[in-house]
Length: 442
Image: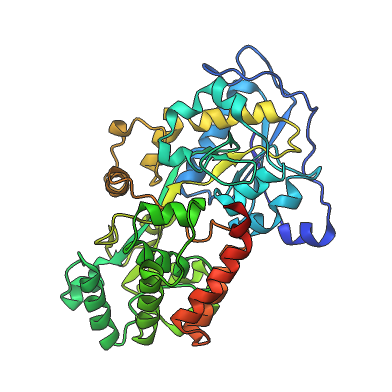
């Protein structure tokens, strides 16, 4: 039977060593690429420690719980589910994955600054052999697979596989259809229309955007504004270090200046410097703001939690590029005690049965039979995602280029909100943080 616990990373960081549920021997058995996960082998009495940070009612949580049921039934092994939080794991994974308390398989954030960093220092395992054995590469689109392989320097897009993306994700505009209808505003189809709508809401005393500068949403909005003036060569330079990035050039200057202008006009509250992503999401759920620009990971929760208004979704207008990628990945820590069982579990999560369930539950599957998905809300999200994929529009995330850029970007944008930086000064600050890391990688 699946066991579940919440893992306190703050205590781990403070105390240095905590004990998880007992693990079995190092011998995980040999994986089987098709059929039942365990083949003819019986893994009764063995335990697989699985860690992830998805809510039980989220699309991913629902799908992974079903995968756990199948894994336990087919192998006879027991899963110990260790629940954590995204931010806690982001800051603690390097220490945890290289310790005796490491989970056997864990969800983890993709990108140069996260999975790439851990791959480059040997904290997560090379999965090339498993990709060949299970055929995972054949199930992933190129834009999704980019985030799964890393060079020796931890730069994505080449080298070996270090993770398995198990869902897709992207960022788009959520809107409160009722608030738009009551104000007599049509759904915006251009940035000019977004600004006109925002001004009308602001004039009525309503802050148009739910936002957070303490965490990721504001950085994603800055990046989308930048991307709206950019092309694929900019993304390659920014994310893959193919060329120097012009931090005072048109794309970044437009993004920073526009964001600063929107703050000055009251489209974004100055209170966002002390707000988390959760705070922003709760404000949108409560109907306080008509717009929220953030990721597909909110979609299932919004469908469940919003009952007082009709939810609308649309891609950001007038852009070829948008933040997004393959979703978070399964990784196998270097200190996994059951690496073969871990790979069996990963393979189950990639089955059409599980991927279809993920899609039906509001997620974005990477290996589903999409024509079998019948839920209308799920279809609406997948169609929006398909629009981006059809134009090869996934441009990854703004914090990926360096291990510390998530905090650097949030800190600089907080300074922009507070008036501590002009747009030009903010860009200079970001350039310094970026170049301190990237200069040696070109």
